[in-house]
Image 1 (tube, rainbow, N blue to C red):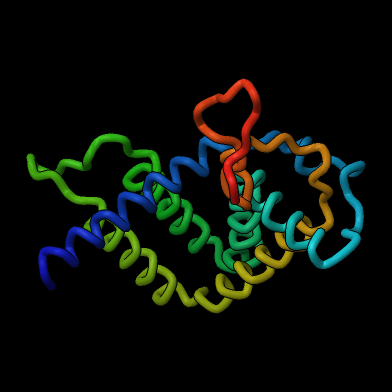
Image 2 (spheres, rainbow, N blue to C red):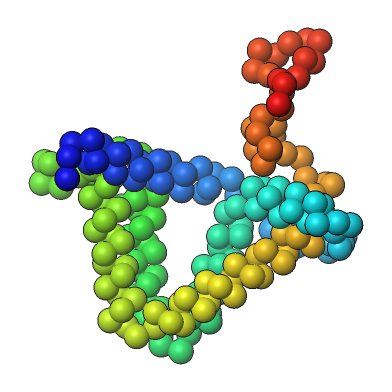
Length: 186
């Protein structure tokens, strides 16, 4: 492995960690997610895809918790020891990777994000394979993703206030705060 590959992998791990921290920071109220008055069928395929992308962007953290709950209930419920093991793994991912701001230091040595990502990924893979619940987890993730996508398509986006930078179509307003309201050309 060349030095360039190691830098790319460390950059990927850092971006993944920062993305996870960003997702945690975008929690939305559950009452906003389950608002029954906001449910309606989309009028077209274009409307459905717009809703899907906007809702996935807006409720990113909430939807992640729904998929996690589906995995815990459907995939791990038959094996309580696996639930305990995977809760410890979830805590390890959270504390050692996603919530960490400073570099991880072990015995005075700084451990890079790529090493932490590889170690946690390997431990998670070994836990899945040795516990015998890997197939249940795969099916549970698929069920959770299906539930999330169905909700995202059926939930109207009319009442959502998206920051311009959160738009699935990119930033529409310019950053120079032009009082005339000139838009960036797309």
